[in-house]
Length: 152
Image (cartoon, rainbow, N blue to C red; front, side, top):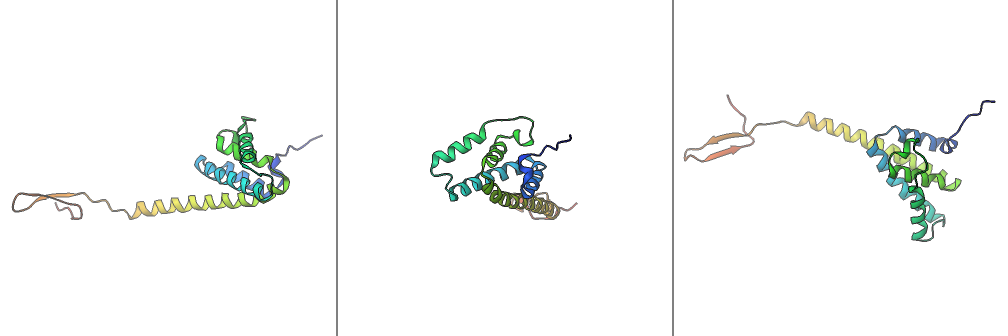
């Protein structure tokens, strides 16, 4: 009998794709998405009246901070682990809502990273490096000209 192991987040195709994309992102991107994910989870749980006070929120975050494994990709960084474990503890309805928000967060972060990289490349191509030119005027004063063309 060949049983197929299915991770909890693979039951929802949107969540599964978001997690797969997030797992292959760089660590700063994962942390940025995780911080936003924690916020989204808290907002949904407040709206659904599952969190009624600050203690409920703090307990959920603290529960997410408990390390339950070391082999999962999200166990390496505590912020990411907290967000994913908080998500795992959500009700199925909340998970479904958060999955859509998470997909949007992951997509926005990828687009932002691509835009940042393109902007950085454009800036590198458009930057003109000039050497400052130091001259002396008639009265012997030193002049530092940052815009002058250097002549041979």
